[in-house]
Length: 379
Ligand SMILES: Nc1nc2c(ncn2[C@@H]2O[C@H](COP(=O)(O)OP(=O)(O)OP(=O)(O)O)[C@@H](O)[C@H]2O)c(=O)[nH]1
Ligand SMILES: [Mg+2]
Image: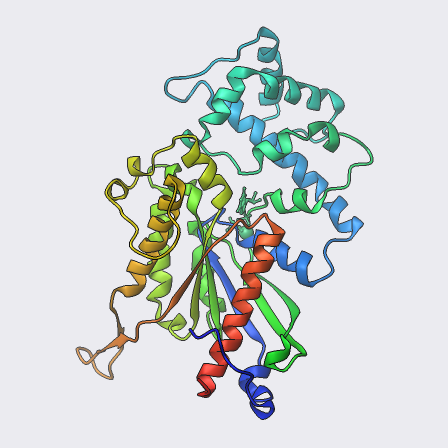
């Protein structure tokens, strides 16, 4: 897609194509980061969060703390080989935490938080945390377990970072709308966006088709750090593999054939950390062993090689021919159509990092404006 478009004539900037609302649909597996992108749009383009909205998040943050410590301490003896708490006093704290079940306490008392702190300080518990890819643990665990003292005060008001980390599974389709300034070279003013969020776990995906009509761009999120994790919905299946397969389904979906496909290879911060800590991508994707990047992008480290490998997986899917079958008038008269290949734009993202998402989204906005210029036939 050309980036060096000269300024389009004013009458073109006032055509329907330019003035239309841009409808963007966030898709991807569970926990890939879709709702986090919605939160970033609220921070960047809709005046952010009021104090009342922040305070409303506190029960969910406390719930995240309980879910995190509960999963760690209930799984430490189940992983193979198991780990035990280092200190005797931790055992009583673990029992106290487990006594509330997965749901957690009705009231989060100072006593409760003291027990969580005791458990979280224990080296055995930390070793179980380091092996959390062997069971299911939310990504916000470390962030919130490290700030128990702050959460446990009356004055606590969640920061933007806390809101971005707070995990609440999406079970309903939602929409936000916002405006973004249009650069002067495209006529200035502002462009309106509608962004749709859906639940990504397997059971949620049957609702997706309800929002396919009229979508101009799909933002497909993949949690790159998922390479060593199993699905919550199916603990035998690799999460990253599921993501690539789901992207293929979305890319070949006939109802989305007009939509631009934008892929966020998300959670780059966790991917980098895992690779730098020595986690091996080829243990899960054996083809990575002999992968040599061929593009012009910088590839100095094993982390660079891993992210480029994932990008290549997306480009390979986009390069395969797509055939769709349309129902004929009579049985046996179905028509097969080959879809024209489409460009797929891949971005490396950290959805919890507002600066990163601002840059990426500005560039997506620019691409959309350029595409409109192209569609109108000016390039
Ligand atoms: N460290 C880090 N955490 C992230 C990133 N993106 C999302 N997260 C965290 O991952 C968790 C899941 O993110 P969500 O935005 O809720 O995922 P989702 O795709 O909406 O999940 P569903 O609603 O189940 O479909 C949250 O705790 C986020 O804070 C990232 O780039 N880096
Ligand atoms: Mg969500």
